Image 1 (cartoon, helix red, strand yellow):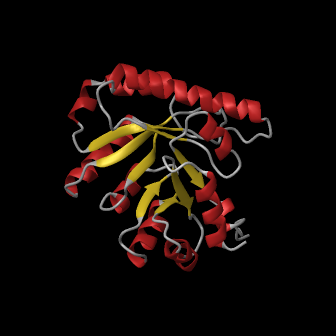
Image 2: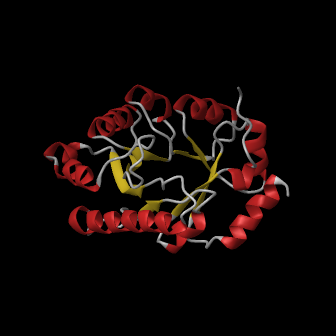
Length: 224
């Protein structure tokens, strides 16, 4: 199947109220343009500089999502245009995003990345750490960021029950944070979980955003 056909199949399968992020990391702009030309406008990258270069070269109505670990010194590259940063894992990073958002006269939407896999290779905060962040008085002074929900990455496993439990835990964290800190805020509504291998489980557990790469673009060819 072609890339356009892959995307069409996913769009027919996934409910309309769930946002599909086409994960375009490592793929050249020509391939991204093929997806764009099929009507899709939402793309995800995991490196700030790669995203910045693609933003300059591709149509300006693309909605770019930062889904990878973000270093504070890279925030300045994406702050002028990024639609949402999924990978906020510290107050230090949140403050930097706010600082760069002020410079660009923007309010940047963010998700708190929650560690649901307990793997050394995964980033993210524990639920307790997210609560501590949101309880800080200084958090209330960050007027140029908006926390819209949570993000999580499941374990690398063939155990679908384990994956489902991790996603269930993220939904639980979302509900707790919503009730405690964002009860009256409609914008706190997003749960970003699920990728090519487990998006169906994520949707059944309450995901509102899925991050799909290989099922759209095919398997990546990594340089050795």
